[in-house]
Image (tube, rainbow, N blue to C red; front, side, top):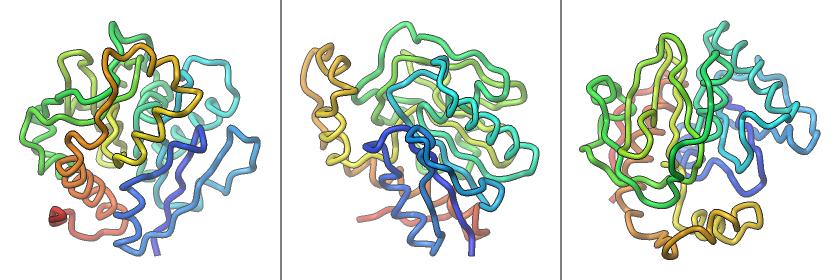
Length: 237
């Protein structure tokens, strides 16, 4: 039975809708919370690794982020599947030698992304009809690592999604979040500075149905590659 290890960076950023797609395929998963000094399970014992988001920067002097980058490089060498979301995508890029820096503007809330030709040919983005409004919460961006294919962009942030080889994916945006997760993020102390900068409150349900459809297709396809199931996942009704 396939197994996935998900690295959290704060308690409130969980797998979200990814959880549903893993459970639907009987994929077992565990969380690793290196930020709390907890000893992680051995990453090499898992078929895939997921690196989730968080309010810190890849460039912060945090030893657990450097450990995660070493796990990413090991996973690339061994052929494990790796998925990075927001901070997780930046960690993948940084681990593979690319720079991470401030984006000219923050993207917090709903912003359109457009899928590239390479993205449209990728099964993870098969359901996208660009432009698609998806949820964002980031102030930094990354260069593409060597050998990466750009899969999606936005007007405010060019590098929104990439793939390195067949198994390594990074996504700057948050397809995994439910309206309840978004509402919760807005109340977290770690996010209060970003929330105060917003011109208007975030409507967490604005594109919720479409986000659920895209997350089912994207993360269902990713989970399918982990357990060698079909990557064609029906959208929820």
